[in-house]
Length: 475
Image (tube, rainbow, N blue to C red):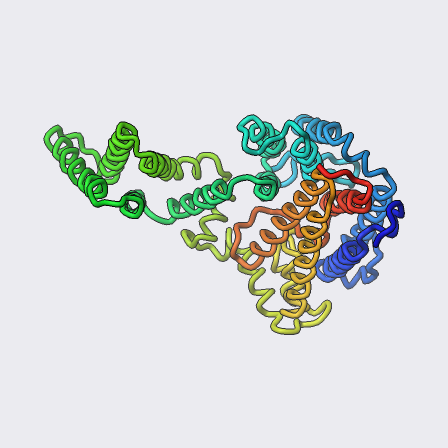
């Protein structure tokens, strides 16, 4: 059993070891990705691999300093840290530098600092502070509203910086709410909404109308013990359509078929909803309400997609869904990444022997697409090892979170696991073409000081909290 007051004994050294291996492997692969024969030394600070060594050294110093600070510091100053980061997110909109169409950087000489990266751990601390307080009750609307404010405030500020990729990461914190007692129904509806959004992009409005009406009628049939209400639901739509089509023809309104069918389904749903309310049929009120909301959401998808997403994000989503295909344009990065990974075979081409890498076929190969370097030079064996290391880290974090005595440490631990899981899944997913390219780094692997330092702080704050778990009070 660990000694109660021995910091260095209580630190989870297995997690530290996995962190060290990932950082070291990332540095080696950055060297391979941007290798220059004229600058062969991996310590050459004029090259990215030399600069990364500086960031790594600084990350180790930061990690050591975090471990020296009392764990109570992170609890007591959670809101202050969060407020400082929010201030920086506002300040960067005013005084920041625009890079790649995103005003999210402070530049100090050659050094770039991105506040949105540090917002993750700050938001995690604020979320843990509020959710561990006695006034928090996940079943109360007020508590959920405060949680939504804590998460969505940095999201809004990051979206104003035109950095949608970093903003999306914050939605992974929904997993923390689910662990703390949020109903599984909420998670189901979030998944259903995403699924409905994708279907609405893939299929025409007419097809979606038919699909939603069939789901409604099938659900009514399943929930109804008799056949009477189901038949009313079946009959109301064709009758309404005939009436509306007749009015459209006689009045020469020239309403197209999809619009006519949409009006028919919406009107029919409202009639069924009124009937269910008047007859106090609770299940049918819920079902028809969901149907109406889903129909309206489906109708709004095109408008939202083409008016709120940036053109390059729309193109990437369309590429992923197969709506568009431009292997030499918008799909070039992913196409070349898949070629690089696939060409590695089982054991890879060998260190510094990756042709796709050496001839710069893959853009951003040392940052967002660093995983393709692993696939090409180390093959399936290398990619499997990297994935196994991340799975081991995530599993360890969840196990550590569950052993905490204080709810603050547990909630923060799940925040760390959720954010790292999202980055790991989406980054690798986009390099192999199963996720849209949203430009987020692979934790501890991708080139860059801000991302490495932010992930290091995120992880080591939790390691410090875990090291003090025997001195924590439950609650």
